[in-house]
Length: 265
Ligand SMILES: Nc1ncnc2c1ncn2[C@@H]1O[C@H](COP(=O)(O)OP(=O)(O)OP(=O)(O)O)[C@@H](O)[C@H]1O
Image (cartoon, rainbow, N blue to C red; front, side):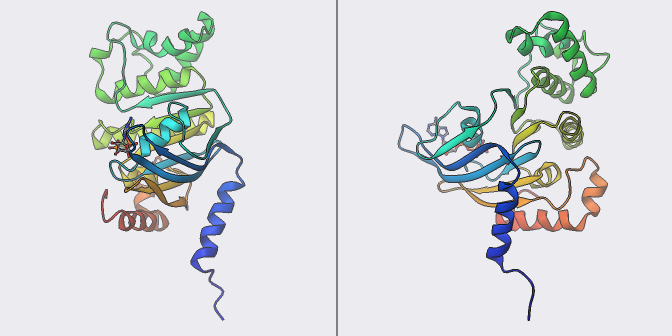
């Protein structure tokens, strides 16, 4: 007699595992029909466990940004519910959106300044964040003096200075070359380890999804929906060699790629 669980059992286990992890954000039957009448998302069931990185991966137009915006409260579900158990959140987008006339330090302090965090505290927080993302020594530099990767580090540091519990990241590293993209992925893992933030991370890249995610929601189009939610077999890794040599991660990458029609590897 076979003892292997059937596919449904495995799926249920995966769901139960994620459910038991005290989600910071949850979507229950949350769908989205825009005012134009366009159905961007079919009902979504997804939970973001606290202090974990959840990655949304899928083709263009499958509603990844719509779901992220819903988590942010920028767009409401048409039916169903989105529950977010924190107000302390920050966003990081593909474009670092630094102010050209402000130094790195002044840019990094900006959100905390808008939140009226007193100056000495905001200085300290900004310096901690600058150190964490590896920009020490560049506090007085202006954005024009920074490389693309350094600008993205500054953008990450600015998001951290507001001490978020939740970070919403919409293809933050998409504009970077592969080398910087891997380095920034390592920074993200580093800051998740140090600060235990909960992260919702949107990407088109399957390798990036598998490298960064504790949990990976694979999405499809027509209308947007979650095809499957995977728990990563290994903790997020900042070591490309471990990633390459880890059979379970390799298998997961292949499975997701097959699910998405061979795209993204
Ligand atoms: N305000 C809006 N009104 C009408 N349709 C919209 C609106 N915003 C997005 N859409 C549509 O909803 C669908 C999902 O968009 P969304 O930006 O969430 O997808 P995505 O997966 O993030 O895409 P990409 O990877 O290309 O950024 C798309 O077809 C888009 O054209």
